[in-house]
Picture (cartoon, rainbow, N blue to C red):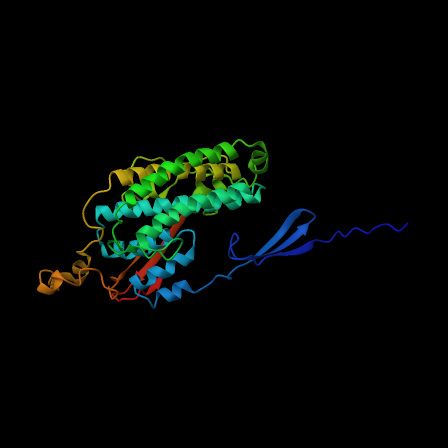
Length: 354
């Protein structure tokens, strides 16, 4: 009887390209020795749209609708950093009410982002049901965004230089409070179903361990960094917007494995609810945009008290010039540090946007 020959040379396996609805469009050329991965070559660029080059031929306000596509699950974060860069470069002050509204929108986006991480993560370890739960909660966040901006998932186009596009509509605060009252027990339900499940623990505990030193050397950020024992959150470090007005804690773990990163995100959703509650309770009155912004950028020649200014031209126009200079701005998005390096040359278009 002839014996079956065993192949001993490595196998080359192509994974992807994956569809955009999956975890991200990329192709992996994997070299396997049995079940061990001995080499992996990623092939990127399937979603490349030349966003940096587009920014060089768009004014800042014209560019805001584009940025939602950087990460469809983090549209509000993308808009926030897009307006924060010229605001800091031109030293434009954001009204307190606008800053509170921004924080509420950013924390809603953080919850939505973590939920979209949680569902596929659990699906990957064999739990399909939570994938449907997370979309139930995300739909409520979409409803809040739609009521405030007119759009649901992306293209909210809500942030503006010096504030936000429109004020919160009547009844929105109560609706957002209802969401917080609904969602907080749901996080407890997630933990009850997932955290101490023995099958889940066996599949994530001690898996994908990244030490503190590796996380720092590899430049990780966000929940990946905090899950490896580094207590670093840009909301506390950079003191941007009005996060210092609220009582909340940075969530971090020392395990460095998949379980630690899961715990960080679960607890961050609770902290986001805590921040939103405080922002809704302390939401100040006043303007939702800086009506002085246009006069500030026009300088001493501005005729702010002119008759025409009583009826028109108070908002920053699309032809607002970006002051000359270089600036790097960053914020804490749901996935980690999101930063923009902007170079202005006193033109309506940025010289460089990276």
